[in-house]
Image (cartoon, rainbow, N blue to C red; front, side, top):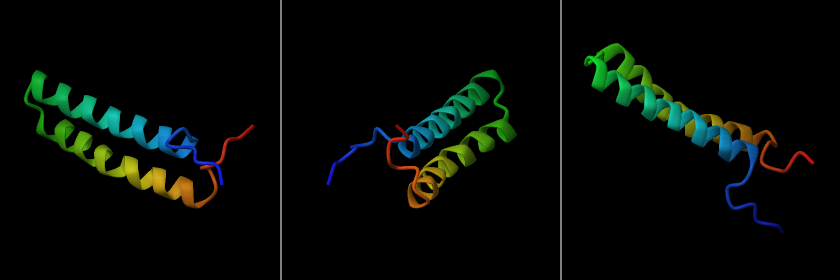
Length: 65
């Protein structure tokens, strides 16, 4: 069994969504603070791993080649 060790579309999607969440939350605190934007960033941080888990369970964990 090959171990992809995180280099799958599901893992990358989860990381990108969480990174966007951290960025949105950080910018919201610096420019305002803008609490609604901060909470949107927090929600994205939570949603990222959930999306990755869902993608992995529906078969997006294997390379598409």
